[in-house]
Length: 170
Image 1 (cartoon, rainbow, N blue to C red):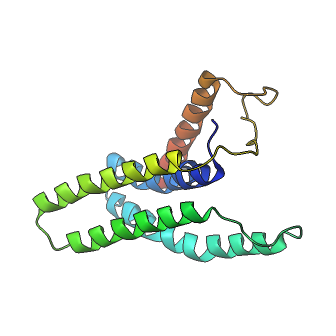
Image 2 (image 1 turned 60 degrees about the horizontal axis):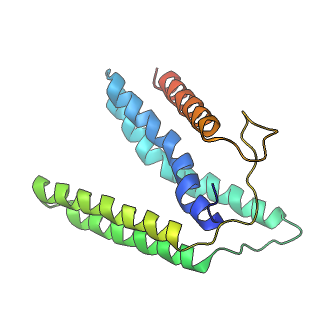
Image 3 (image 1 turned 135 degrees about the vertical axis):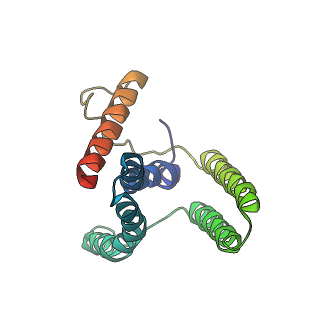
């Protein structure tokens, strides 16, 4: 897709890691039932704790295990952009808690616009990646996968996520 490594990490990887933890609460709420709310809240609250503990430990261990280059070399501009967007959004969320519903709706739209600005700045502000990503599972031999193959693999992946969330909620 010609995206820079920073854009791939900040946008695509973020979406890919957030989608499973978002799918479980959505399926639980849509499905209903006596435990739906408990499952949804547990998934929403539990995921960040898991990522902070186990995920951070695994990431740290993986970085330390890299013998050729044990240091991370992030794109400084991308990290600043990510942190600035997160901190601004988090501040708005915390300030919005006691406000009336109408004001919170306006602020929610503002947060969507903030994220749209972040996506635009991330895509505009980085150079295309020099490394090629792993090939799609559906088109292993192809040099560059076609758009329909990308869409089919994406749809299959999302369908499997929903099916897994459905099993989890049961």
